[in-house]
Image (tube, rainbow, N blue to C red; front, side, top):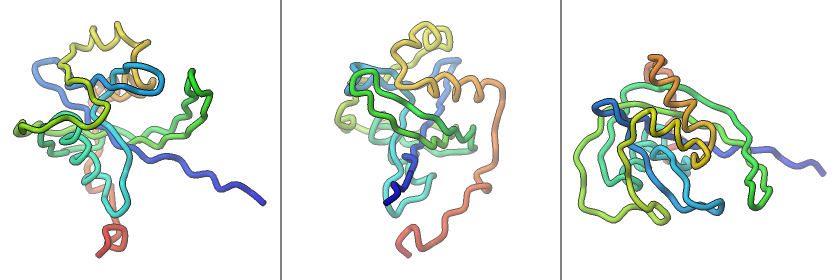
Length: 158
C-alpha cells in the first residue's frame, strides 16, 4: 500500500504601506512567530477568496488582491515536533481596505507594521523562510496578473 502525498496549500498577503509591511504575530506549536496574514485554502474556495478571508480573519482588514507575487513550494520540519510538511504557498499583493472592529483569529496575538530592516532582523522568529522570500520577491517587483489563476466552478460548489 502506498501513501498519497499531498502538499498543504496556503495563501499569504504581502501588504506594504509607507515602506512598512503588515505582519502578524502568532502563537504556534514552535512558540510566538512572525508571518504575513496567511493560512490554508479551505474547501470550496478559490485562492483569491482564501487570501481575502485569511487577511480579514488575521488582521481585521479588508483586502483586495491585485497581483500574484509568486508561488512557493517548500518543506518545513518543526523544530519541536519534528513533523515534516510540504507547503505550496501562493503570495498575493494588493490594497488594504477598511479595518473592522472584530477579534483576530485564534492564535493571532497582534498585527504589526514592520520595516524591511525590522523583518530581516528577526528572521529567527519567522514562521518560515518564505516570510522573507515573499517580501524580497515583492520588493524586486515580481508580479503576475490574477488572470493566471483559474478556478473551475465545480471547486466553488457551483
